[in-house]
Image (cartoon, rainbow, N blue to C red; front, side, top):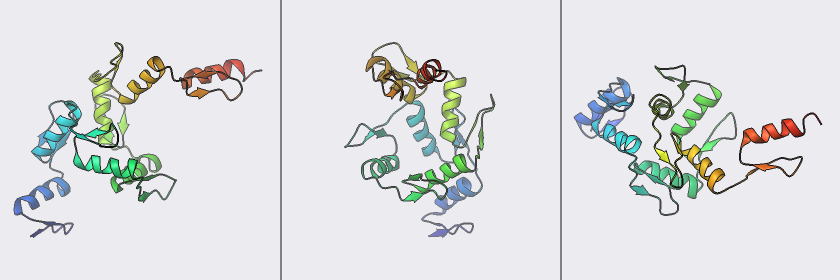
Amino acid sequence: MFKCHQCLKLLITRQGLKRHVDAIHEKIKDFKCDHCSFSCSQRGDLKRHVSAVHEKIKDLKCDQCSFSSSHKYQLRIHVSAVHEKIKDFKCDHCSYSCSRNSLLKSHVSAVHERIKDFKCDLCKYSSSQRGNMEMHISAVHGKVKDYKCDQCGYSSSWKGNLKKHVSAVHDKVMDLACFQCDFETNSKQRLRQHISAKHENV
């Protein structure tokens, strides 16, 4: 076994120790993505990134719902958090809880400490998470719209926007209601406009 002198982690091989030191302590990231700003210290991580983010390959599927992923650990976390409802990591500042420590750290950094270390080189956008930055660059600057509606020509850079589109336009779901009358809509903006026009100055 080979011990890291900086964090005392044990690695099985000398090569594994070198990879660990390069990636974790010296932050050496020689493998760079041709499609976005992502970089990493191991070739395998780059292959997984390209497969998951750019090629949208998610061949690991949950046997309880439609969730799929390109990473085994993400599937394990999904099952634990969503189906088994295990959320052992709790925030000291609010009621937030989650299934892994890295998510809790990201939450505290983003929500309570307002730290946004990932900054866009092309505009003033910044984020506390690398994944959000990658999506921003792809959607806003690359104009990539990978999420396409199978019922019409609508497409979006964001999965959430596609879900909202299908719900509102095709499923006709009206899930927002005015608390002062029977008006219903699927748009927060239209609900605000309705309240402002019909109720605020009455």
